[in-house]
Image (cartoon, rainbow, N blue to C red; front, side, top):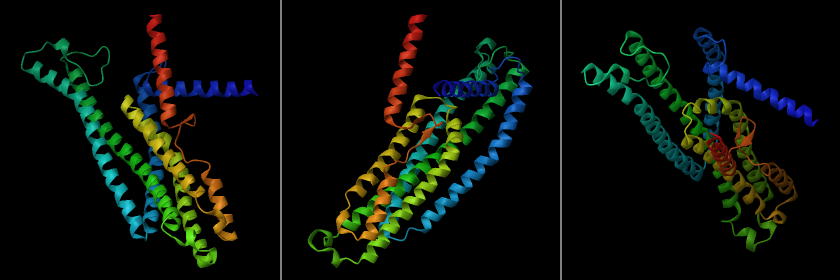
Length: 327
């Protein structure tokens, strides 16, 4: 069994490695035309899937918002909406600064060359390539083409990553609503502390636990749909490859994990023996379901959290030190 599992992992790794080489044009005996055809084929197949999944997520958002009736629930939703706007503006500014820093130096070199203060061998491209003709028609064509492509990728990256954060914030908002529903039912109600069980109608408790289950079910449906698009969104953000962006992904995963654990803790603090039998059974199902935390899986290999990020960073630094010592 171990040999079979190892062979499966090796085949999966080699297949992924070959796909990455084909997309990046690093595979042997691959021309630029083949690479362009491959990218066009991937976009033609992947883009409708992304649009369909995003449409499902937007429909889920609309349904969740329609179920909000309490003023406190609306306040929680408004709070997370404001946070999401701040995050979205920060992402747009950071991504724009990153792209402008790449293209501004190349544009400045072109202007200096046109005014005669720079040599043609000092001209650069936003995405450096080998064997390009300096100060020729090919260079200007590549410069304009790459600049337009970089800004198109900027727009796509901003839209995809902002939508990704909106999904995460929406899940955290639903978790907060569940925590509030649990707390306001018992923390603010002195009946469970000073009065017997008969003072509270069992039917109201049953409706309360059903309401909590519906909220948790909405989060579970959202997480199932999110798993179908999380890999596509992750691959889109890998273009920038910076440590800061990677950390944001792990921070978001840790945030969802924390909210999920908070829901489990709140459910465990409910006075179980003060509830009627019918509500106790539903509460047990809720506790059993919440024992499995809601988490983001990166490629199905590991969970997005601070602990995993620190381990990956430690391994990367160890590999870099070994590589540096070998040289």
